[in-house]
Image: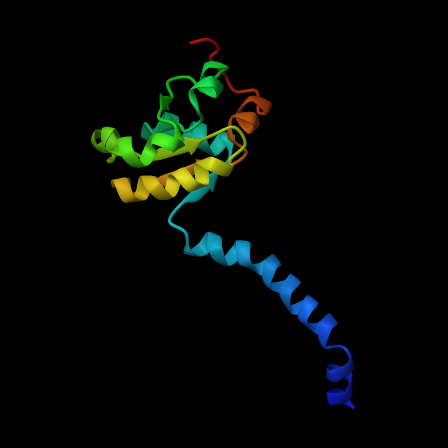
Length: 140
């Protein structure tokens, strides 16, 4: 009886296994990654208590439109070639951010290769920061 059920419903069983794996993967990936995500309020605590470096990895046009105060700007597209410029800051925690939080996770991986031991990605990026009512500098 069970074997007959499996034979006649194998496509549904594969879909169920696949969708379950997709639900579990972000949890597993988060535990294996050296990069941690922080929200805007957690980021401000790191900045105020531990002198964390804020790293804006957006492209220059985006950076000119507004940024977190005192952010260091190094576009993700240049991070591999210019990451050595950050070597003197590796003893401090670093919080990478972009527009919405996608590119900063990728950039955070590069930062661990540069030598940062404590790397964070700002969940939701600059958008989440400004939606939390935190300050944003405008202009060049």
